[in-house]
Length: 328
Image (cartoon, rainbow, N blue to C red; front, top):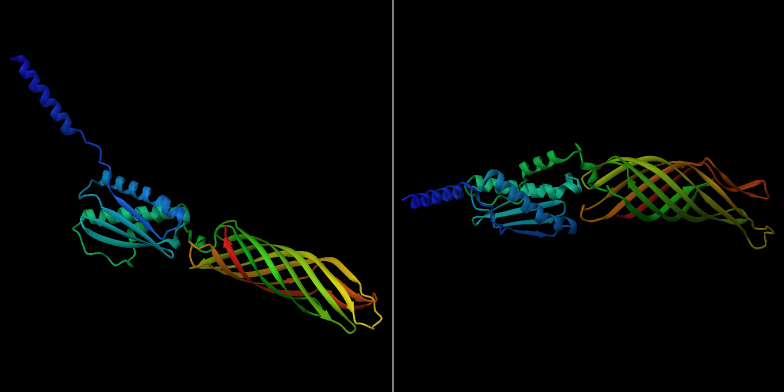
């Protein structure tokens, strides 16, 4: 009589223990599809989305069945998210250009989790317009950011290399010089950008009895201070430019003059302003227009017979440069 009772008690105890324990959540068959997104962004997104959905189900409880599919499609600087749950779908859109690059993957994953939660907490509804912004996910993503404002990173934050055509007016008398510029930019924050550049220009000027050929190579360093509006970056900043100029006198035939050359250093302070445009954060190409003005503090003068001045690198110079850049 005692052994059957003990067996019955043991069975009841095991059943009660088994009923009180929670079995681990089965592995989800959730499909995460990512289309038209940057390679690094697309590679990290599926695992982070699944992690956020798993956390949501564990913390808030699976009030309805888990979602069958989450699709993310990137277009320009927007991420379109569509969740399919119990045969119904709902979509939302996140504007990515207001978020720093390191926060974007997390923001999309949080937005997907919020969308799943809204579908699981209420009755299924018709698909929301794809263009409607998802306010709750954006607010959560912004709360996770350490910096209060990351919008200046939208346009050209990150090192960039530029090449372009250069035109400048320099000297006395003023001469139009044509050439090129190579510039490297490195951000020192959201506002300040350091630029190092190398210029090469060529030209010439006729005089009474000779032609003066002008060749110039110079380097410059500038600190830009600017801001970003949409896809456009505006900058202005001071700097200095120094280089070498080569003046070669080319007398006319029969003038009896002997041509000489002068090679000397020149330079001075310069103020530059620039505007740069980037179509999308996912596209590293940039277009920029830059203008500058400076004053020669280290002049060079070319003289005829050591007395009459033919051409001098002095006074004010102005320059304009159209550039094409590549984000690094």
